[in-house]
Length: 216
Image (tube, rainbow, N blue to C red; front, side, top):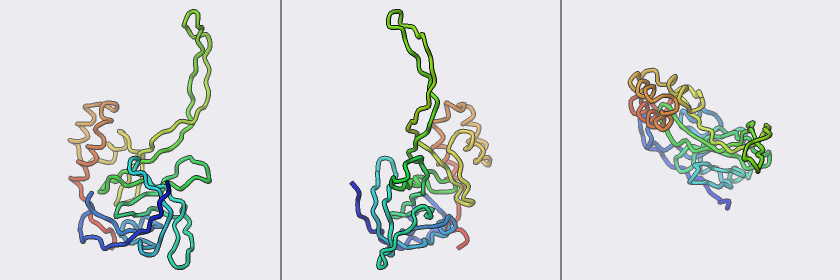
């Protein structure tokens, strides 16, 4: 069910560092630079919209956002992020039909390295086998392309805006200042470390706080 929400603005607490508890100014941010400064292009009290927020997947699906008074609808493709109740939702670009609602992924981790994820569809080549029912062995194999659901995980460097896939190799390259964390992950191996990547990210952020807002 699509909910009609009005984004109410509020004054953020004065802080010198970006932490997980920080709440951004509600509204629409058309650029990452505006987001870094916590200065929305359109503040929450200027806009209203038609949204559905899935608390389980941490994703917002947006039909429209319009300006109060004029009723002018904003181009959702021109928006970098929307902040709702202090939580940023970053514009995602999943492979969905053109008529689908626009997807914005909640920035679940906020700090030096931010994290968000969203559902997507990928086309992959699968191998199929046809079995002989009498002997239970395959007698023919074939390959076909199929569209499969996946979860895209992203990490974002708050100081620069650089975005990369959240995975073992990329995280190691982003946390070079922490050899102890790197060594701990390497000792587990790429596969074994998968379940520890998120913890490593949080530990890194705790040790490398970033000043906020940037360039205020």
